[in-house]
Image 1 (tube, helix red, strand yellow):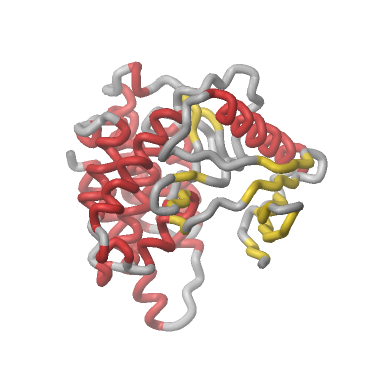
Image 2: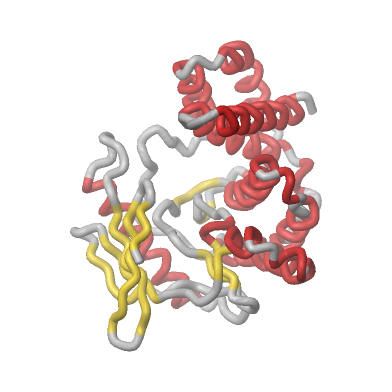
Length: 305
């Protein structure tokens, strides 16, 4: 089995008695150097190694196992995790048959994040991808400029208002939520595996430092996007969102300025992807416009608060 992604090629293989995944990192943009890819892989390997020896995870909170890696060749081999991604499990309709199971899944997803953030990161060489600065205001400003360059009149009209609002939210944020902690930076349903008992996130290629709420807000954002992209499926996103927050230990954090600001950041990134998409056919075009409209509506609702 070979899976081609934007950033990597993943192939299933057998080493000894183990089924493994061989992930080859790919230079997905012209401004991504081989040296940068090697540094990302080295950080990924180090994070997994530290987690393995930390004692932070265990029981229902799983961790992938590295079998082999080649920093120079930008390749990592990990043991196959049994189970399905949360995204695949939800798409199969399992959540309708056993809704309590998925409340538990998202509770564990929040709990796993809390443990993950406790890992010491000193000495790990984290480096950001070009165009993705750690500063929230700068990141959002870049996304709005890209949207303008793609012909978005909406971005031109609301750029200043959105950035002013974001700056206000950051100023209002207590220091405990502005400190840097370890982040997965791609903590989405397709990167979290569930086998019915243990929850195991995968793909640490984008890990780095960021806000304590960066991964939590991103996971919730991706759940909300599933609801927007497939509204006919009636996902129980509100219940899963509350379970995530409870597992993370911050039930009321949605009301905080930084939670709202990070949600807008994720929405701007998603809006950029919709504008870059080239839908084929009338139905796909209508669906893409619907998604853009829904994301903009979410942003306006947050900025109006």
